Every structure is written in C-alpha cells, then in structure tokens.
Image 1 (tube, helix red, strand yellow):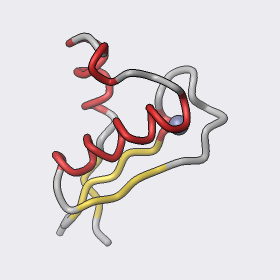
Image 2: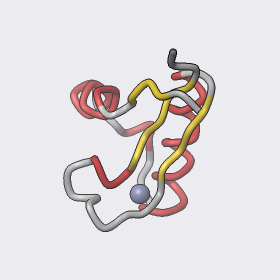
Image 3: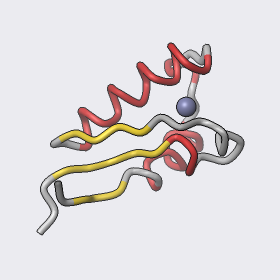
Length: 66
Ligand SMILES: [Zn+2]
C-alpha cells in the first residue's frame, strides 16, 4: 500500500544531473517542496509555470510506500 508521494528532479527533462528528490504524505505537500526546490536550486519562478509545465511535472509525482 502506498502512503506517500515522491518527486525526483532528475526525472524531469533537462534536470538529469540534479540529485534532489522529495517525499511527502500528500501530493499538495510534494508540489510545495518541488516549487521551493525549483526556486532555490534552479532559480525558477513556479508562479510562471504554465499549465503544460504543471501537467508534465504532475506526471512525475509517483505514489510510493515509505
Ligand atoms: Zn532539481
């Protein structure tokens, strides 16, 4: 049974060299951590992500069991 969600930055196209990954209880929390990571590590502004980018990133969040 899965009880958490994870996101590995290296799964994202163009981010293969990034070692960061996040795991949290809910999808919402993973999104917040992803946005924080993008800001801190990649100098990105998540508020500027378009729907296509969000849809793509959403497919990279996987259910996991911890
Ligand atoms: Zn990253």
